[in-house]
Length: 330
Image 1 (cartoon, rainbow, N blue to C red):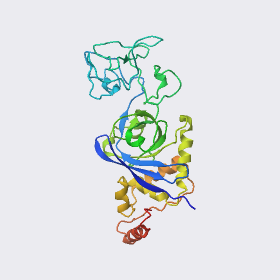
Image 2: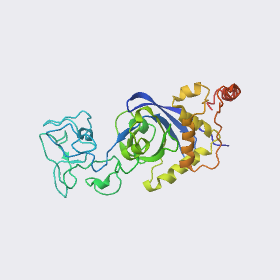
Image 3: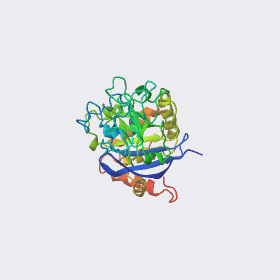
Image 4: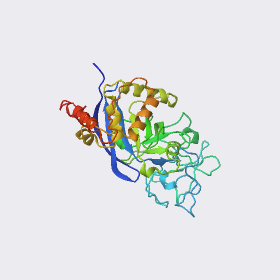
């Protein structure tokens, strides 16, 4: 019996500047486990960078003060204010109650003590605080900046509730594919975390590679993520290749590419007859899957309606889709 992929709705998420609009689809039936696919707008994550959060300056408390990000984003409240009675907690910044053991804190009770009584930990030189990622990069103490993934050097994503609900965990791998730009794709791991129902928050390293002109708002990116793929970062490429190989053996592998390129809810996609006009986005997505999966032999039957107006191809494609049994989506 051949391998046949099945698809189911995984819910809806938001992304940068977009309320909703990212439709998560779970892909099951692959030889080496499931995948999650979706489209979204990217947002930049700078956590883990040594120069992420600069030392607090009470004269300009709401400025970056030489850091990459605003210090309030190092707390669990994006609207945090620095007072003598803070109710927020340090989150993206490593914090301690006191100095000692080679650790120095910025002990300013009128501004920087969080609701748990902790203060931000300095990096050597006291210009920047230790900025953390949710996943440790190694076995160094967390008060050492080198213990965290550097957003400016590593391609990572922030794991949020919509993906966590579908089984994705810290350390799992995925691929980001820019829809409108041939050969612009990047493998990554989930090394940071967020609490909002959004997807698409990616490290500076990945973000700048995909959008060097910082113009991401009008250009969706397609993702394929592999729950349960976590291993050591040095095995990232081989783990992704194995997952993609398990998918490429399916007799309906073309539907995976179609679903990824559609950017619709799965219900809308299937209601339309599971047909999709060939597009540059589909070509770019397929090329990325071939590249990262090392595919040599796979059965892709894209619906090709070129040249425009070729109604015979359109009718045949719809006929193939609607002839499928009603209890079988594909």
